[in-house]
Image 1 (cartoon, rainbow over the protein chains, first blue to last red):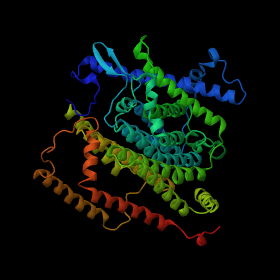
Image 2: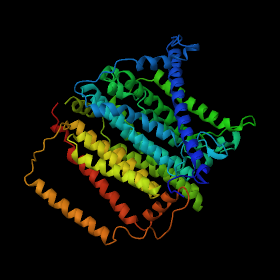
Image 3: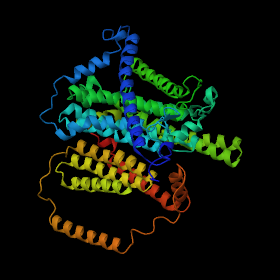
Image 4: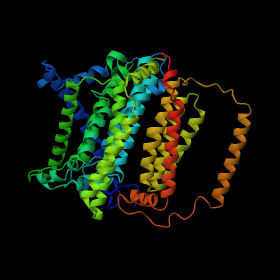
Length: 400
Length: 173
């Protein structure tokens, strides 16, 4: 048995040609699904934002303008691709793929359904069931920074560089919070495998599974994850990276044609992946009521439905909230969210151990909360009284 | 199968490691370093050390090299380097130390010091075996080393913050 292949029943009887074909098929289907979703979501975002702004939005290509993304893709494909003279060609070429690949690879470990049977083999509706699935997701979101960073630096001009450096600082800052929010969910499931997560949240319990979903038991972690997720994908109100008024277009200012399209694609793919992670970790993944008719299809339907709800949240935030200032963004990330995430890990770990060991919860829980409040108070004392000196210092550093 | 993975991953690790020292541009070197770290993570996975592999990619490739790049870009030292050394006698010293290290590595592997018996505890069971075993050892047997390392890191961070922090009166507005 090869040690790095995971628990998928597909590999139980050894590996032959059919198994390899099934794996290749799964890869293609997953990629096609993501591409299709991106197309639909770009259309969805434009339509919803138009509604919020009292506009009609895309309505020419196809019914209700559904084919607008396809038309855009064809247009971008045939456009001229320019490369700045000062660009570092290698970094410039590789950057779009560096941001596209991690989004796809992170999506690969998310379970989108139960078991299916193909050609006498049984397999999970999930590209790979890694034993460290959750850590893999975090690792991939860390790798995704390179795309933006290299694009900004490789363009060889000022604004993209500023955009790229801002992006990396932002993503690193919020990654810490995101990791701790994920720990909040890991504490509940007691496992690092994404499939175990779904199982622990009452997989196949039908509608009753909602009671086991971790967004109830780890509600603060869920909220922190959602905020960090929006910041990680560089979307409004955290879209400091491509603040048009300040940075022209941010890190992808110099990109044209199909390479720009790949950045666009990877942004939306990242949104889907991050929402998928939220669904898997906190909202029970593909669990929901199933019916006898085509029983395998209900998992993916519930999964995609929950992802769609998150997509609406993204668009809603974009349509209604103004952008944060850069120092506000950093203050929120480092001085509030990180602390709250740490406190939540502490509180919920204490609660779980206390329950298991049979300690007196009436004493343990209030004292933990009191301790957390005391530490937060001490931290607040350490913060500078007004943020005005700090923000001017930060501006001075950026322009220097 | 194990052999194929080992050959590809180690070749990639060595190739990228050569790229780190042969690239003229610091940013290219840093990207090559990411490649090296990733290849080593693949080798960890082949040895069923999933947790180590994930942490390797997360911490080193995902955070530390990003910090390197950040500093390189912010300080604007991303220009191509010349081959002339600014440090006197750096080249002969580096060669001598490199030779010593190479001889040491060969000797150690010859003496069966680094490649001992695979594991006395046997294979780790279950999807979470890795993290469980690791955590148990870390929080029982090596808890002092673990906590002291944490203290050391905190001291490092606090020291760095104190060193770069100017007093408000010195800031020229």
